[in-house]
Length: 332
Image (cartoon, rainbow, N blue to C red; front, side, top):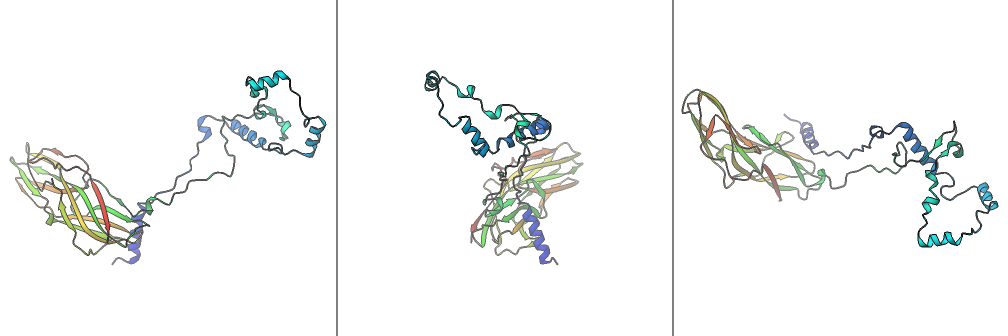
């Protein structure tokens, strides 16, 4: 007997399918684009040395006294020619007074210990390994996948008859009602394969609704449904298929699109963070003549196109648009 702990663990594993990891911070490696360690070190030193005591206008008492003695605080006189250039806009201050930070300077002038080297600022080199304490790495917003009402996970072209796992339903954090009545639609195809050694070999079969059943599980345990699910065909569903084998003896195979099946009236309780698995069971019903061995399966969540090998179907595939799978729910 399955224990409550095992049911919980199974539900948790199902829920992990919907986990969406946060955005990973992946900065560009400057070494991979051609920058050297010397260039990166120089860029970092130049950045640090910009922010000394005088960079923000604050000067020492000694510097203040020197400026006063040398007359830096006195009013300066400019020629009329210089003033006229400023008024006419013909004077480019950048050419006369280039930015100090672009002027190469000796490390001795900056108080850097060790042998004297020439320091220069190159903004084309990225600032690497420089902690500004301003990085804000991404966090997910409140409207993430796990916080919607529900999500589904499903495979396509599922070929089997015994308990096909059509989809998994994950109930989100912000589900609005304690129970919902669900409806889902799956596109359906038929797959047949086998071998015949005789001429005029034929087969015929259908997909009667009486041969289909739905099972819903939670944590691997079957959920008792309050109502019997209703199953309906799409308008252009091909309910019966027949065909013949060409050029026997031959190994044959073929698949054909039959249309859509809709399962409705599936009432489920919807506690947040729970998951349900939906399974379809099909009992094959077919008649063969002069065929040595045969295997017949339905294909749910049909996505691929019809195809045959050594086999001719007597009717064309369904004209229903292949939408593979869809689900909806209404509050109860």
